[in-house]
Length: 381
Image: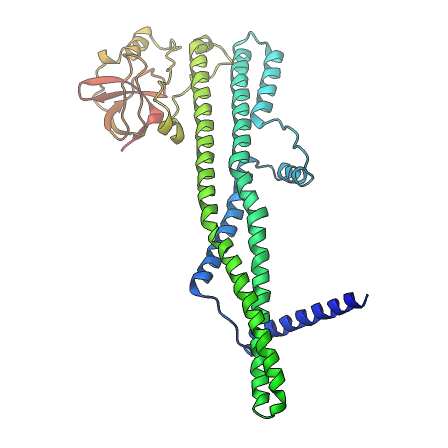
């Protein structure tokens, strides 16, 4: 009982001494032991690493799960050390709705068939999204969390200890200074000076030991950067594979729709043929160019001679006026002899013909001629 009381009194005395020293430093009434420049740089680098890791972690969580309620639910499951329940992705939910709608409208109708095809692709997109989220969480988010909840907490703890050791050291320096000043007035204070010097040596040793421990932990931030760099590469690889899968799924869907889109001609529920779309930047960098399947059905209300001329652009003569220059935005591989292959950034001459699909133009480059998709071009005035 007496031992506990003495320990509490001692702890209270140490706390009071540190508080006094800290307050006097803030008021400019006490000297403060400064750390060397290299140590200060290590501290600043560690703080910078912690702050940016937190921001990158939070924003990546938003990227993978935009719903804040779902993020809170996942956070609670993790803190309770329970498995997060599987959640249907938006693509999978859309696929379910499209399939149910097709069954109501009639799976044999053009609209029903298309809903089924698009729904199946949305299901595949949703599954790809699920795999990407799992991979990114495991290979990228988890290492970032481990750093913040493990290494950083250890560093913060040792830094607090170092701060206390420094306050103790500076308090001992202040006591020694006062004892020496009193010694100059009365020789009876010599014992106080010796006691203060002894305490200073002890606190200096403890401070130096703690500074070395903290320094080693701070220098370990370099290893943290190397680990996070590797995780970042894995995140980029997962994201690249995800977007490449999505791009391929959409190309497959476009081809499927292109095969039977002619059945929509004259149908009151039909829409215009699918336009050629520009590929995503990530796919352009990782996938070979895949031709977009153009749709050239019989044009309703236009003489067959015009439709035939659209299908045979090499036999078409440019109009006397109405030609324009265009810059090619993306590489395009011709699907057949009626189309003109394109290279990004090249200049071509384009014009339209009566009855042509508005999503296509006739392009000329030297003595070469063929149809080109409008979405691949920047028309110049």
